[in-house]
Every structure is written in C-alpha cells, then in structure tokens.
Image 1 (tube, rainbow, N blue to C red):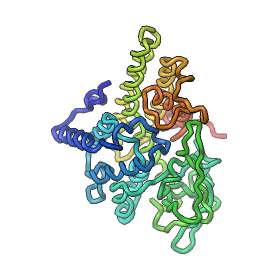
Image 2: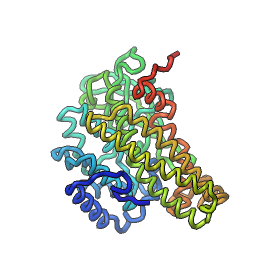
Image 3: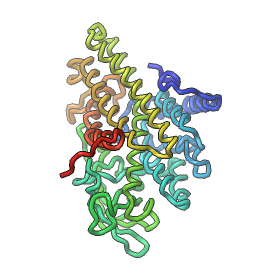
Image 4: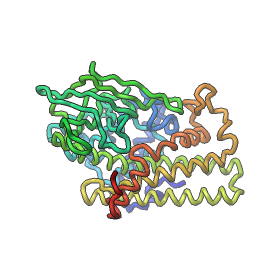
Amino acid sequence: MDLSVDGVAGLPLSAADTAFRDEVRTWLAEHLVGEFAGQADRGGPDDDDNWELRRAWERELGAGNWLGLSWPVELGGRGATMTQEIIFAMEYARAGAPPRAAFHGETLMAPTALHYGTDEQKQRLLPPMARGEVVWCQGYSEPGAGSDLANVATRAYREGDDWVINGQKIWTTFAHHADWIFAIVRTEPGSVKHAGLSYMLIPLDQPGVTVRPIRTMLGDSGFNEVFFDDARTSADNVLGATGEGWRAAMTTLGHERATSVLNYQFSFVREMDHLTALARRRAPLEDPDIRHRIIHSYIGLQIMAYNNLRTLSAALRDGEFGPEASIGKYYWSRWHQDFTEIAMDVMGTDALLGTEWSSETGAPQRGSTDEATTLRRAFVRGRAETIYAGASEIQKNIIAERVLKLPKEARR
C-alpha cells in the first residue's frame, strides 16, 4: 500500500513541505542502521521489548531535533506545521523505525503543558523531552476510576511547599521505566466527580512510590500499578489552577484520542501490507468473501485518514482538540478489531497453531517480527483497544451529546 503522503492522506504539499519530507527521509535512511534497523514490528507501543534500544533511539531522535516538532524553537522544537507533523509520522512508519518509548510525554503531557503551563514550567519541562532525556507515564485510571474517570480517589494535601500524595493508579504504561508521572489527583477534601481535581506532575524515583508490573496475556509487563504512600511533589508541579485539573485532563485525552489515530493509522498501513502479502501467498484471495473483506478494510483505512485530517484541521483552527476526536478513537479501535479478525481468517488454523506461539505463555514469541506473528500480536492486543483511552461506549456518549448535541443520557 502506498505510504507516500499524497497516497495516504491526500495532502497538498508546498515546496517547504516537500523539502521537509526529503530531509526526514534522508535522516531516517542514514540513522536506521545497525541495531536500529528492522525494529518496527518488534514489540509494540504498550510493551517494553528492547527497552534500552528504544531509549537510545529516543536520544537519537532528540539529537536530530525530531521530537516536539511543532513546539516553539525556544522550547526545543522546530515550529513545524501540522502538515509537517503528519509527513514525519508517515515517513517514520514507512521507514520501519522502532516503536516510540517516550510518546506519553511528547504527545500527551507536553501539549497540555503548552496550553496550561506557566512560562517557567514550559521552560523547565519541555527541553529535556525534546532531547529525548525524560520518560513520562500517564496516571489516570484507578481500580475504581476507569471509563468514569471523575471517580478518582487518589488524594493530595498541601504541606509547606510540597503536595503529599496517597492513593493508587493502575494500567499505567511504562511506569516501571518512567522518570515522572502526570496524574489526576483530588486536592479538595469532600469534593466529588469533576470538582476538586488537580493535574499534578510527580517524580517516580522517591521512597513514597511503589511500581508493580502487571503481566499481560501477551507475556509482557508494559502495564503497571503505581502506589503513592506519602509521595511528594513540589507545589509548582501543578499544571493549571489547583482544583481545576479536569479541563487539563480533558485536553490530554483529546490529544491522546486524536494523535493516537494519526500514529496508529500509519502502523495499520504496514499491517495491511502484511495481510495482503500473506493472502497472496496462501491463495485465499480466490475466496470472494475474503477479497471483499480486505477491500472493505482498505476503504475503511482511507476513511480513517480523511477523518483524522478533519479532526486535525479543526484543532489547528480552534487551538485545541474538541469532542470530535472521539469519532477517530471509536472508529479506529473498531476498525482494527475487524481487520485483525480478517487476518486470523486468512491464516486459518495457523492463527492458533503457528510455531511462533510460546508453549509457556500461550502468546506469540517475543522478538519475532515475521508478518504472521505481527498480525497475531495485533489481534490479541486489539481486544483491549475498544476499552483503553476511553471505552467505545463512552466515546459514543461523547459523540452523541457533545458533537451531535443530542439529549444527555439519563443519570442515575
């Protein structure tokens, strides 16, 4: 499948955009060598395969000034346009570059800091991320607060120049590797739901923080529980006003839902190439049902690309992502589940009995990068995609109430 900019997104390119694309291609060709080569399908965004190599790659990206592309130059960015960000994401996927290790900071926390942070906070937080030196993780979900995020129970109280935090977060990706966590914390005693929450930045390397990895059905431990027992953070590590963190949290979620579809979209192109290659070798393209489903899936991928452009264009116009980002999250997660089911049908019994399955974990062997194993891992991982970053049911409510302006669901 064509991974050129014009082929995937239909973007009109200026002379500056074309020069930028050429620069990206040249840099990737020169740096995706040695241990960095052939890593695109090794592991995934939510596991920690080859972690040290991925951290080294982050520093390589930072040295090349490819992190925080749209940030102001004085904060370590390039002041790049939205079109250039899309170009980079496309070329990154096209070149088969390694899965990112520090995307939570660059794509989620940093845009929130740019919107709500003070000048001092921006200058302190963003340049180290632009150099690839710091790994962040996201502390939203709790045992009692998942899709209903406003049920957050982790609390903090002020003691001198510090906040003292107690509570628990769960399903925290890369917490066992991260330096910092951005978390939603209840800072006003007696407050409920959206009121009284603060957007807090907490260092993880301290005695009051315990991180416990969670082993998944894929055999990896990218998710974690994080326990705060009188953990501390400085009073100047709150983004936005104290007690008004819900708005900042929604800004982060908007970026998560919108930017995730951009990055996933281009990895899905690689998976589509894997599927069509397998289908040709195994001859199921003679089956009209399989042929129709693959074509339908390809059309869906194009729809995803254009809807994503619409969402990004609106964000560029309005200065932030609106509720329309939920359309992309709902669509891509459902699309990917359907797509990987096609892949399993193309593989037939090999989908269950392939030699790449581990006899110990029942999951695809870690480190395998062939087409079939990549698609098997995508199928298993895809079962959770309609849950994380806001379950599909939540996305449908947001679309209905905030985009279509339909009557709100009755609350019990």
